[in-house]
Length: 123
Length: 400
Image (cartoon, rainbow over all chains, first blue to last red; front, side, top):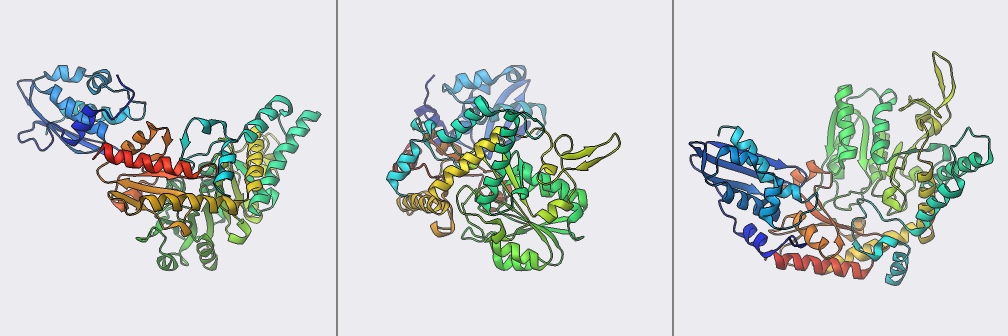
């Protein structure tokens, strides 16, 4: 953990996120919006035989929400739906590798919320 | 005021030793004088007010009543026209629950597109309860109100106008005198949200001519939990009380009650006595410097910031210009979310605000999700402006 929020890996992910765009053949999707800061993330998932075959996200947001979306979608690939549902705040904090205060952590948790809601909804 | 005076004032604020505070539009820091006055009150002058016959209670009562006088003198009203509430939000809510009976029987309430949620949501609810409609004076591209449109919007259909004096997003000082007199000429009542005005400029409610005026203590060096509602005596007299119970009654039987005189009629229950004492001290502190001096110093700081930022690539500024503004600077950096700007500045000990500033409809109108906002006050210096500008430059480098 480091006190600084904007470490190189976070900025790199913000500028060049993984899995950004439209997923063709998505079976589930959900768009989550944080009105406080205007972060707006949609997660799209293609589930096959109860596993994540592919996953993408789109939308706009701050560096933390975009970096977190990128890391989360990378991690989710190949996971079982039940495993996906067990992901928590602690997993996000660990992936991000930075210490976020009570306000900014909400930015990083937005994609997880979107993902959890997505798998409950058909596309 | 000049930079040396501001540096000297900063010494009065213990917390400012540890950070560069540029979020005074949200709330201001407190000078030693206010902290001490409240501490003194609790240590040696505290008792409940009005009904205690012992000396301590009488002293506390006097301090509480003197605070009303201090506020009244400060805004040019009579002492019994000053009601203590929790804050601007509560002052406006009080009106939204007591005003209906005295309004002309018409269907429209006119607001501006610049309203803070606290002067919007209570009127949305009010309109719903009473089958009325809200109309909005639009904002022009130069971040000032469209007064031409206001002339058409405020009409014989208008029951009430509720407008902000100074915008918390852009710092725009609105010509409320003009809007109030327009409303009066059509027989409509007027409410002014002065949360961003009273701390920064001279306000005379009688000169403005408004029927009601609301503001908060914590945005003007006072404590949290104490706010003010000014109302014209004859109107307050006709309105029903908001909260009922102790202190707001003259006499009570098992079946009914008779209301107390103003302002007690609207101050039910034990009030924030220490808050009133702190607010009175804050006003004395402001008056020692002078409100004209304060506004002019804020504009000096704003001008310095604008000079260093205007024309800088990737910086968008939302300001009506120094002469029409208080010390508020709203901006966005291209490709950087406002929360990231605020977090990066925070890493350097510079406190600014980011987001929608409780003006979500305004943000959607501008097609943005928020702005970063630095707001200056009497304790800010040219060095603070320099730290802000260098922080902004740093944010741009980090995200380049």
